[in-house]
Picture 1: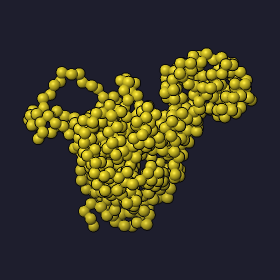
Picture 2: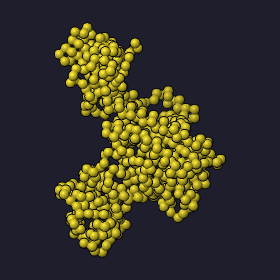
Picture 3: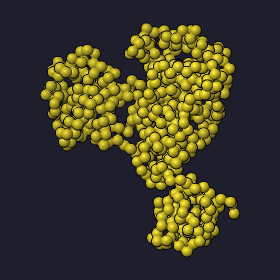
Picture 4: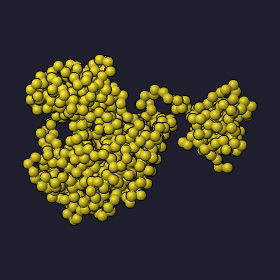
Length: 602
């Protein structure tokens, strides 16, 4: 027999009754029932209940051991007595009567409960992460992550993709966030950058003729920490040559949709996954109907524009008219069949809106064909009938209004749509609902500087090519840029790439990059495009976001094995740490602590 085990702790069943077996694992629980000792023995595969009889010579030895000690036991498999089976455990029909046991490694008193949930704070959990990972929830989520990545790799290989590894030490480039810089010992005063994404390298692979590339890519961004953002994250990065946007959608719907189908019952009840082809929404349409470019389509509420109603001469609600006259709009959210809700339902929504910085959340409640409520008296019957038709209102419905400048109205209406859905309890949590957001603006106006910036990925091809960039208004140019959204989370971003150097030079010039800067920052790719670059495109799906969605876990730190806290400190390993004077000398670096320390957000 093997030195440590003949079976794992999740393997034994009723058919194994009578076998003499050897198991190794951690003591998850110990229970003394009148001299009979019960031990739940745990490994990564499961839990087996083991029993030490009161007349066993091993009893006095075993009862001294603490939970979380690692032991090896020899024993005989028996069926549990009638009525004592545990249907929650795959091994719940049997138990192992211990004949001998060996302590492999004793455990100190643990700083928090492993086998039972408790309210231990995150700082303690992260300091003792190796213990936290033994807990059922953390352990299963880390295993889910592994299994998801294995599924993704298999599906990408099946579609003819090759897996490449791109450099970790790279050049700094403007990707929208701060770089992590690594000083060069051999080149004093110069720095490498950890990649925010392997964007340029994967495009260069297309120029090299590899046609279909992917990797599970580590990415690094020096941003403030929060629940859904980490300094280091991983993405399914891919690129294809000689394709159109629709080819990427078809390919990734099969990979990602298939993976979600595979794990759709991970939380117990199987959820439905949007069937391919996934719906497409233009960016303009998403911002109008949902107020965000990552809409949760499980929420059935839709925003509509009702500005024309409040422009009417017979509508006398001056609070809206003054905003409209200054360039504002009125956005509205229909809430179906809330006529039986108490007044407090509407008052709480109004209070919530004030808490969000809005003057309130005005509404009209439809009874028959007439409107009731605080704003209804300003809307005569003819205008109300037009409003009912425009918004699809029926008796018993309510309609809520937001009035502001277009961008602010969209944002507030988007928040109100989510809040109303929550208060009505109508979010469909039985689905994973996917969509593609397409036709992003190529550029946006920086409100602080008044300059034109790239709104998304600077490497995307403008729709209309060079002719579009030579038009009068860059803010009207759309890009072959797209995001994939699932349940209100952006899980992927991508685009058809700009593969022509003349278009690239013009695109970057509009955003304020001179030819010299372009050559300095992107010289390798710009040079490569001079030697024949295929039309190509791709995207990157966030591995961590997809684990979060499948596990219904809102905090990224709950789906990683080892992770830093919100201030980007690893309390277990003690990083970041100070460098020794010798290390700094080798790197030609001196530390200046004169500037105030910037605290990262939690």
